[in-house]
Length: 79
Image (cartoon, rainbow, N blue to C red; front, top):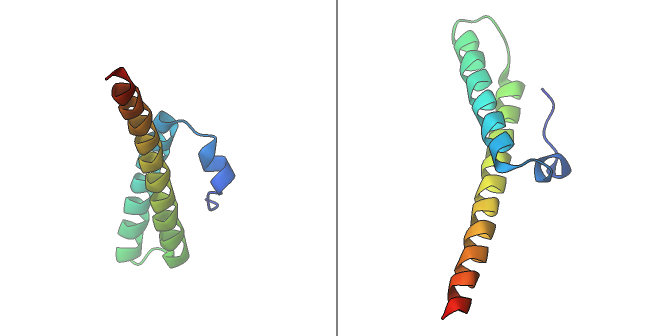
């Protein structure tokens, strides 16, 4: 799995981001499990997945705030 780039993330819609986030969480769990069993040396992959997860969550939150900002502006304009 390669690290996600900002331009790739900005092109995804929130549903795709949530799906990607779920995929990363599943892969992270499996990798941590294998590491605990001594089957793999995946510390770099774990760090990379953790950073990708943080990027996804940041972009999701930004999209939420953009949506909330647009709806609050329309509410304010109605008064």
